[in-house]
Length: 115
Length: 111
Image (cartoon, rainbow over all chains, first blue to last red):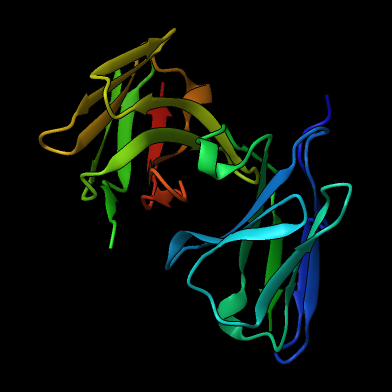
């Protein structure tokens, strides 16, 4: 069974631009969660999507948004990029979602650098 | 809000046991997790424990939970160089189960 895949793996953007990251969950998993990992703030939860609906949201500004498609693939969008958005963005999938305490499987992440 | 604390570094000799400690503040934590992150990789769930358990053993890994002191530990027996990684402690509470992570402990195993 293929694991969680994230594309692209590396990305360099300029301040003010926008970016879209993609996550393909493990086949059969309906929940996708996104996390931001930085040296300063550590790992922080962004949002969770389950069956195309946002179920939970972390404490991030509205510039961070996401969506999930009918095949459970998810995209995360960051608009008006700031230098502080430079981070490793991790996606995790699970079958039933966080509300069940279901085990999450993480992808390798997308390393975003904002210059 | 919830807080999870870990020491930043731990250095051990190959073959020794490693003990990584974690404290948390949310007394209503339901699940407590240990994740491993190797360089350039995402997180891998190593093990988890329910808050109504005191101990869980899985091969070389032993998790101890002291709920009264809100203290969680991960013991790795016979530590190998392949165990060198960052280990994250995390907790989640009933309801949303959104995990709160510690900053991670960097385990360095030297020969």
